[in-house]
Amino acid sequence: MNQTQEIDQSDMAFTLTRVPSILQIITAFVLGCFLLPILIVPAAHAVCRSPKSVCKHIGDCLNRNVDPDSNVAVRIKEGVSTRNGTMVRAGADSCAIVLKIKTQWDKWSGGCSDVEYVTIAKAEIENGRAMCDRYSQ
Image (tube, rainbow, N blue to C red; front, side):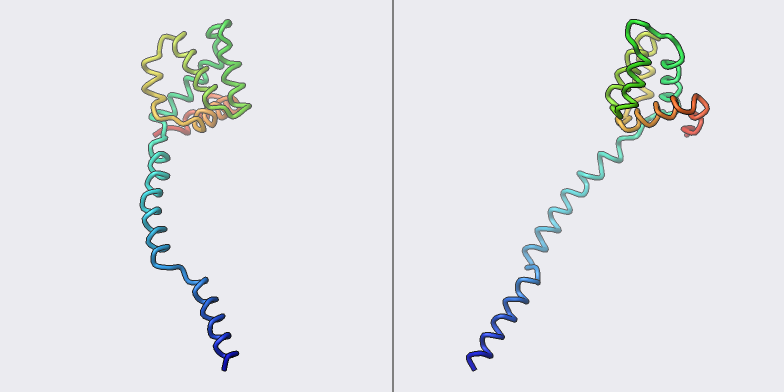
């Protein structure tokens, strides 16, 4: 009889370790409710306002000799090759200042993420201005 009790206790211990408690389920649900919106909301807002205009502006910066001292084109190309969107944006910002369209540039590029800057600039470098039309909204 002693052996039967030992088997029952070991089966019970095995079953208890496999089944999550109600507290674990509630904790996972509450954390999910708080974390899910935090992870989803930033992605929803990271969208360029005018990717077509951003593309054309980057094309202008690459094709024109905007300011030989500032190396705008070099900075943009280096940002694309290293996948550094901040560097691409900095090059496009300085180009906008030289071209005196900084206010427009800020409107066009509002909400763009670093990944979008790199993607748009890479498409412009590899395929030229014709690719900008694919960003038509």
